[in-house]
Amino acid sequence: AAKSAGVPVILDAGGMDAPMPPELLNVVDIFSPNESELARLTCMSTESFEQIGQAVVKCHKMGVKQVLVKLGAKGSALFIEGEKPIKQTIISAARVLDTTGAGDTFTAAFAVALVEGKTKEECMRFAAAAASLCVQVKGAIPSMPDRTSVLHLLQTGDRSDASNDNKIEAPRSKRGTENSTEDSCSAINSCFRLSSSLQIEKGNKLLRKILILFVQQMANEVVLLDFEMSPIAARVRIALE
Picture 1 (spheres, rainbow, N blue to C red):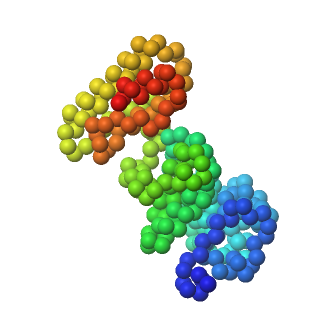
Picture 2 (cartoon, rainbow, N blue to C red):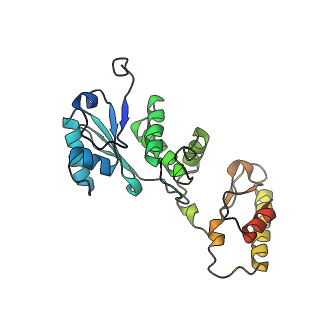
């Protein structure tokens, strides 16, 4: 019904362990499996990118013209019959807590961007940003990000460098940048003075659990994104507040 109405049909292969009916693939515009699902459904190896391409060719012969393959840590690739594959690297996450639902989030975000008229490359990057945010939160449903979060990540770019636990990025703001920086640095210095006074042991992993983020729109504020429940972490939280 969707196909006859001119509505794009995207089929996520998650959970499928049986051959795809040809009559189903014939009405699918974009088929979206991960590596293991692609291997299982085509009965072909997908260990290398070349092998993935060969498995995709089999999907083309089965009737689906576009195959969006999720490659986990290696990113993703969109294979359009007769065209060069479009590759998208991952947008690094500061931390990975739970990958449950990341594939669903990726496909859903791709669909959103597609129906909004974005290019295939833009769709891939939008989906990669959504998936990056997804793996940083536990749970399949709670981890799915909202549009604002995805757009913010895309605007600020790849945060892979910011994942360094010891790195603190100076705030950027059009208003009072100098004062904002001084205020924020003062708050951070107080935090580290507190940690020193508590005689935190060298190598303690707790400090690596604490991520301080300067938010561009609120350069005066320091936000504690996450902390591990303990007396030390509670004191750090109080210091920040």
